[in-house]
Image (cartoon, rainbow, N blue to C red; front, side):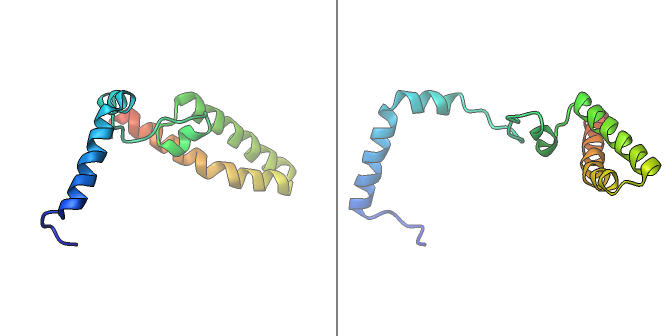
Amino acid sequence: MALGRLPEHEQRVLDEIERTLCRDRRLDRRLRTLRLRRWPGPTRPSARIASGRPHGRTVAALLAVSVALMVTGIVTSAPWAIGAFAVVWPPTLFAAFRLLCRWSGG
């Protein structure tokens, strides 16, 4: 792609688009108040883990569920409990690690 000047007809089209966008007050207000964030805000509590900023209550709940499933799996040797623990444990570790990193300032 050439970095030179646009042809005259393309420049006119671009100028018209810019004029139209400048007249849009709603767009102007949204662009002025636009804040860039590193992570988008979660829309539901389960997305807090995926967003990388889990809360202490979320980690505590995951940890409680994981421990309960681990104990159930050890005591009963039930395949469903062992499988459920295998599914819940990695997100629990990830969430706890992210929470500790946030608390330590890392």
